[in-house]
Length: 230
Image (cartoon, rainbow, N blue to C red; front, side):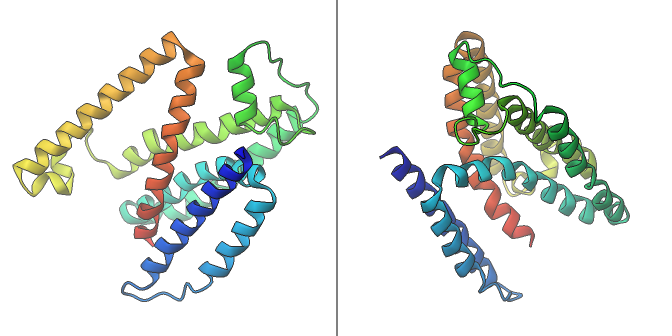
């Protein structure tokens, strides 16, 4: 039943993304993206054959999306940097290969507690049984650090905007009501962040489960923004 739920969720996710891609293709300028449906149905079929492996693919590939956003930001703000940036992306697979070479033969991480078991399972320890959990966790950590580093450090630096300057937010210039709404959302986000940190201090395993459950929402939010850039 649990695998059925995972496969159903993955199917709905693929159909939602395919629908967004189809809608985007019908906007001006028109795009010939009719291939989206055959590929989507192929992904759905693979998902029902290996639902957990499909989910793992999403976990490991999702952090790469941040590099696409950074590419678009560089193209917009500093087009002369684009070739150098794209060339530097070759470092990522090289570092992954070096990581796998170093840790492929390492023993599995010990699982003396619930937290360690959660971390190894999230990295695919239950699925990729022939791969060292040490290697899996290190790979996942590297990709996530890359993901957050791009969003928190690289994109703000490339954009050159001052932190907390609401004048740079287009919606805040529409009216005072919009500005107040943005301030409220930012304050709410700060409150949620503080609550999460407090939760991590009090009960790390439980808060981690809550965090990764909610984090799927930001994955869904990235899709329409990415399509809007195309």
